[in-house]
Length: 400
Ligand code: PMP
Image (tube, rainbow, N blue to C red; front, side, top):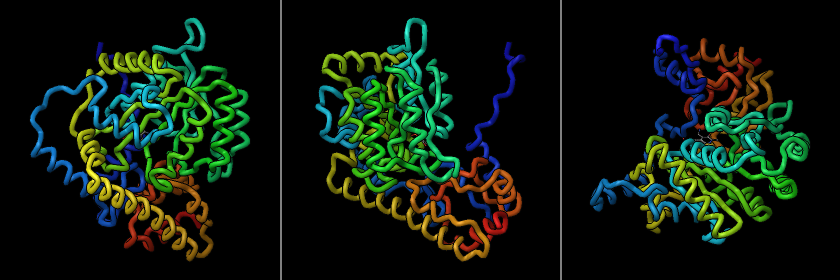
């Protein structure tokens, strides 16, 4: 009966945003949730998106269902963005999905239903420690067995690469999946170097491990192509992979739910069979994906002017995040006795582990209305140029 159901714990990050929204202080600042904000504190609709929407509105003739695997033009655009021409088209299956989360969920359903660690044993997936909190829930809900590998060092600011490699060499067995953040690791902002990617790729290949790549921030680290470099290295070394991509961040299409599963198989036949099973997972879950967001992406990428506009706007977001990192580090360097935040300059994307303790995080919320996730993860894109001195004074107040 429903009266025996216990209350689920609130989502740690979205719960904070609810608290932020009901905080009456006018000068509050939300550094918790993972959305980009411009200098005015707004999550903007990109100009290329508005232009594409106008085109769609004028030209749209039907609201009929999409096919199970989604809009063909969108799938072609995703293939190019994620895989370039690295893998022959007949070895890649692309399935449109509702956001990166939907893609991870379809991929996890696929792995749970099609692969196993032996008779009656679910497939295992290894997650980095730490990782995006939802990874665990998505994999477990799909019925996969979840395990972990080392990622962040005990300094909480750099990669413990020796521990990572040692874990990948010893913990998983052939056929297990290893989840990797392609770039802009969430929550730490710490990514492997090109040499480290090479070594990771070699271990995956030697040990027969499946790369399960989460690509949610392409273009937010060093640039669109540069951010795919780790993935390219992996694909040079293995003949099977799953890549879940999201266009929430790099097209600012958070609420439109635009993502994709890209599956690479060793042969055209294995690709076709895998695609048929991915489609089965979609069919029994939500039947077919929503059109609008994917149509926006496809429209932009089919039009050279809109594509150029998108690349400029994406670059603007990326460079602004970098400049906020620099402003914050410089601001903190002026605070007597404050910790050194220079490590933030080596980290990529919207997020960083700030090193602030749970107590300092609480104090920032209580005294200043500055909202940060309990782990100390900050969304750099939630900072603001005009209020940087205020933010640095507040951080220095709790951290010195
Ligand atoms: N993976 C990672 C690492 C993320 O940070 C996010 C979004 N916070 C997602 C996947 C999910 O993206 P989407 O919002 O498109 O579902």
